[in-house]
Each structure stands twice: as structure tokens, then as C-alpha cells.
View 1 (tube, rainbow, N blue to C red):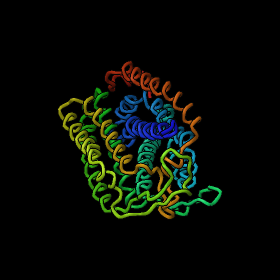
View 2 (view 1 turned 180 degrees about the vertical axis):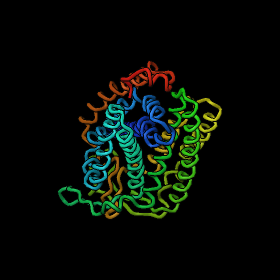
View 3 (view 1 turned 120 degrees about the vertical axis):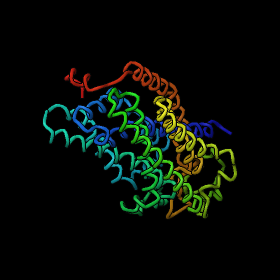
View 4 (view 1 turned 90 degrees about the vertical axis):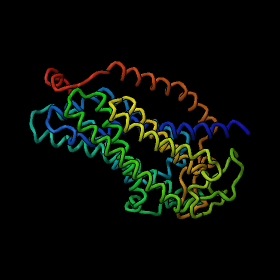
Length: 378
């Protein structure tokens, strides 16, 4: 097998790692925004919550940029096809994320309850919507997206905006929201010096974790009977090809086909369940950092399970199954993937090092006294 084959596999794994980083790090920030009005009953309590993630939220946006950049550079056909079908949803996602930094920066500039309440609600929306869309997007690619290619390899999306928010996708989106609430609440438990905030954050983490367990179970059971995709005929892996060179069929229950063929993959859902349960126990025992890390491991298990379920598909087509996008027919050139891998080998460790350093330097508790003594804080 040549270099291209290994580059494709490496970039498929890297895409999964970047999506896991997006879920864990951005999910934490988004979760705090989603539960902001619950954990903070007064203006100062909400300021405490915002300043716990204040040093990190903008840095965590890099995972969103890296995820989009990786799809654009390493999987250009997936990027172009996804934006064709998910265009309106992507705009909603971007608009909500544009409003988010405004909420952080503008909220405390004016001492007016109506002004601050408006930005509090904007932080709620900009925390809930991106995680809902993120999970719904995963749900849609799991069950397939209605698109096809013409002879010139131009993609055509044949669905509608409403189709993207079908029951299965919504359940996946709510699972994402629940995990983000758990992670955000765990972060507040780590950083809050206020008893009231900690008590409410523990309740939010508990309900978020329990809801995630329930929704993961429902989605998993649904997936056992949900139709999936089977690659019947195609050129050999690593050989230059397009979606027009393959035959794909829809088979009932095929979403779990890889798990039946490779039973070791069942360790991924086991990891997701075990980590969220251990995390909930750890939070109630006041091992807050352990609880937060278990949230990260849960994201690894959940998204790892998605990758294992779909491989080798990246974006199946529900309307023209044989036009489905796989790891073998939608990757960039060897030169592009090679250069991108070199840059990634440099910048991913730098990002992890910087993020770890920022969390270390900005460690400690935030309380109302700190907020009242520092006018420059959020």
C-alpha cells in the first residue's frame, strides 16, 4: 500500500480527534452559557460563572476553526457537499457564534438589568444552538443526507432545511447539548468559590449526565434497527477514485455492521457509559477535576463510536447511495495531505501546550468578592 492510503487513515483519525476536542472544549463553554441563568440567580453570580470560563472560551474556539479547516483541506469534496446541503444550518451556527463574543464583551459594560438580561439570553442561545446543530449534524450523516453528483462531479442537495431536523438528528443534538451541560457544570464546580453556584452546578451536571445516558441509550437502540450503508463494490482502498466508481446499498441494521465484524469496537460505547457514570460519582464525591476529565473521555467514547459505526463512510447519500462519500473517494491529494500533516504535527502540540498552560496559570476560585473588586472583569 502506498503513502496515500496511510495519509487517508491518519487524516480520518485526526478529524475524529479534532471533533472530540471541539466537543470537549467548546462544549464546556457552550454548556456554561446554556445553564448561565440557572446557576446564576443574581448579576454577580452570573459574572462569576462567565469569568470562570473567561480566560479560556475564546482560545477554545480554535477547535472549531481546526475542525472546519481539516475538512476543507483534507476532505474538500465533503466540505463542498456539506455546505451545499447544510448551508442555512451553517449560517445559523455562525450567526449564533458571532453573537456569543458580543455577549461576553458587552454584557457588563452598562449597569442596566435589561441590557444585561438581553446579553444573558444571547449567551444562552449561542450556547444551546451550536451544540444542538453539532449533534444534529452527526445524526444526519449517520442516517445519510439526500444529495447526488452529476457527471462533472457537481453535487446537488435534494432535501430541505426542515429535513435536517428529523427526530433521529434531534435526539443526537439533544445528546450533544446534555454532554455540554455536564461539562460546563463540571467546570463551574472546579472554578466557583460560591456555594450557591456550586450547588446548582452540581444539580445541572447530574441532570445533564443522566439525560445524556438516557439519550445515548435511546439513540443506540434506534440505531440497531436504523438502515445503514454497505459498500458493495469499489476500487481498492488508496486508489484514486470518485463516488461515481462505486456501488453502495442501504441495508437494515447496517449501522452496527462494523461492531458485529469487530467486537472490540464495543469498548467504545462501554467507555462512554462508564466515563459519564464515573464522572457523576466523582462530582458528587467532590472530585471535580476527575468529573470534568470523565466528561472529556465521554466525548471520546461517543464520537469514537460514531466513527466506528460509519467507517469507511464520511457522508453517505440517502437519495443516491452509490454517490456516498467515503474516506477513499473524497480525500485531497497526497501533496496536500502531506503538507497539512506536517503543519498539524507542529501546531496541535502547541495548541495543547498553550491550553494546558492557560488553565494552569488561570487556576483558582472565582467568587463575588473578586468580581466586585475588579471592574475590568466580565
